[in-house]
Image 1 (cartoon, rainbow, N blue to C red):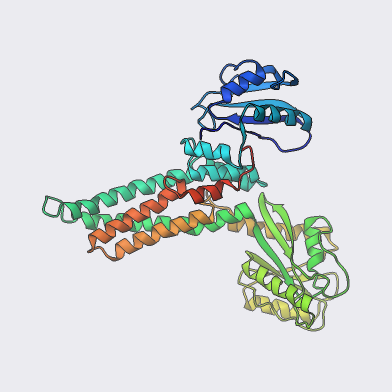
Image 2 (tube, helix red, strand yellow):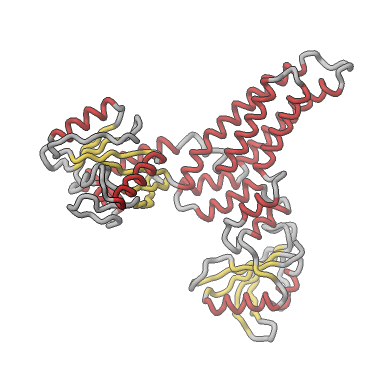
Length: 445
């Protein structure tokens, strides 16, 4: 990290104010060259800014952060200037002319991690906070940035260290006065840890869905009202609605925010047997999306004279939506209600012509989202990477518990469990993993 880096920290385009960040050993030199001198630490100072040829760039605020008391742990600075593209271009050009390098995506946060200002789980939370679109995403990211996962992991590791000490005492000093039940005392501790870690791994999916969106699939035969319901809930014409069966040929995803949570609502191709190759592919994609969804809404035109076969993707707790309530209900509606009872589905009867019905449907879906994603507290772990490492740690502990008489092997399993937990917070992690994580950040963070 001998290079000094810089990057705009605000989004590209025209704005009232733009921020350009600098970090590294030559920061003080760069600030002095452009602003005339280095301001007092952590004091916003108004300066006229000049390039290397003495031409004025702008008048703006300069902030100086002396390492290690900065975000990155290095000498760092920020230039707050007018947000016109020409001003930013001139300032960036002046910094480059001083021999500074444009930062790579996530490089400021990576330096914060490598200088011990953040652990890896907290660094991931920085990216989540920047990407947060909903109140739930913001709360979850703040919890993790505040060290929730890191604190839980530290507690687990301390307990593993205690258990490992017990095993190693029995292995290394078999002839000394080591209590005979030392290994037996480690067993309940490892059992408790394995239970806690497995519970945290199981809860990761809740965190992932808060981050990525709760997935709701609209299923049903052609002309059941799926696209109409999608448009009504989205508040716009996201899908084409016609009387021609099979209009929707692909999955149309619409992001919504309900009850503070992100939701992905998907209109899908009408489910029916067809010889049309394009429509058949649409049906295949519809079934695949529905299979992976968190909730499925089965739409049935209740006014039809013939019953409709329930989709095989339905699961208990899904919702049957009998549409076109403004028309007389017929065989399709009656039979669907019977099927819903047999399959433990909730039942709703609506018409898209009624704003009250659509508001009620939105509330019904919101209740399901809150029920699935809300909890007493946000999940400790929120990513697939976390889940895989937690599962590895729990598996190692279960393996150690299964062979208590083979002390050397049990001790090694406990060590490997601790290593898996350390990789969550980045105490040990391959360079390739770090590169992959920080590459997802925006430049300037």
